[in-house]
Length: 314
Image 1 (cartoon, rainbow, N blue to C red):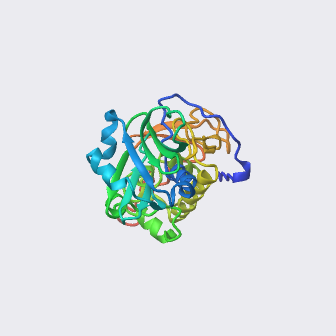
Image 2 (image 1 turned 180 degrees about the horizontal axis):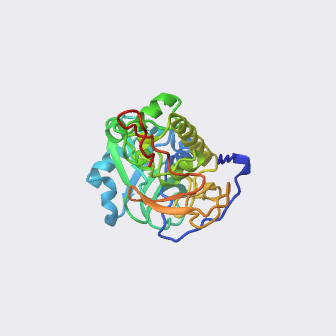
Image 3 (image 1 turned 60 degrees about the vertical axis):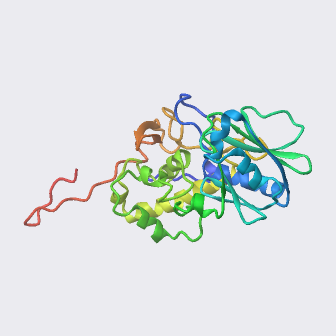
């Protein structure tokens, strides 16, 4: 059965499922939304101060707070980029301030005299009366000062939305791999920017069962997945990210992508394409959501016995 989902046909839905069933961890669309919000606000501004809560010093990834202050205070933001799930602030002395939100990090723009943010752990003060406020419930986020962004992001794979990532190159990432296709897509060294939300959504759009060994996918399935990865990320950016739990954009507002998901955190709810209840399983150690009917197990190649007879396909 061919299940076709278009942007126009996708209904808005309320998030469902148990609370423990996957936090909405910031992925490429969420981080790109924050970058787009903050870039026009911070570029050209000079840093006046850095404050970090004493209980959150691990945010600095082992660097002394005074060293981070010395690297940032007095510097002007020259540009703000993104690679994978990392935000890359270029400083006017040639160094880079690199921030990773991890699970529950938030980075929002506020007037200096605004009340503290919930779970605020740090802030970067700018001349002119505004701050970047860092909040993080779980305290897993990191800040780094780098001579070049490659120090932080050099091992990341290509991004599905990169125009330079060809279909052939994407297929080579999958070919010959025994790991489940979901696990391969989550490996940031192979493909950067995808996380649980958008991998589940892309695999559904491509009609691929998440536990299928990546190397067993047909060429046609790989090409469907190549297109689907790009489409779901672009859709997530258009909807300004998914706010299942902690994510907000650079102005502190929720995104809307969580209202349009097809399978993620919809366990037991009917598939929009065929009506089959959405299933939940653990694949590669991660909670995974899929439609058992639209995403059937891949057919294994038939083995050939000596003499030309075929063995069982299963």
